[in-house]
Length: 72
Image: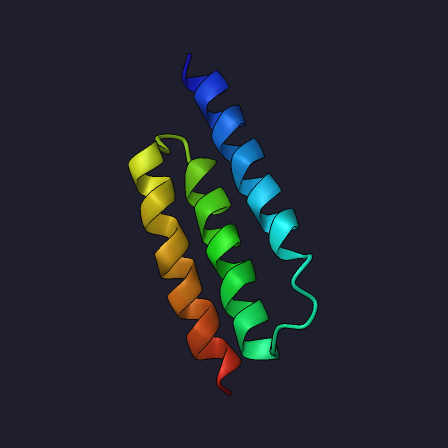
């Protein structure tokens, strides 16, 4: 059952990430924030004990990191 949940969370996160790819007119800072938020969500969802709470928590952390890196 945990494997099915991980697959669904990863699939939903990937769909959101690809959906954000349609925002081609975004500035570079916004693109970095969006991409890293998706990567944070996917990364936490694929951890051995990844939970939906971790996935929801990984997205903002990835977004903050992407925002800060994009400023430089």
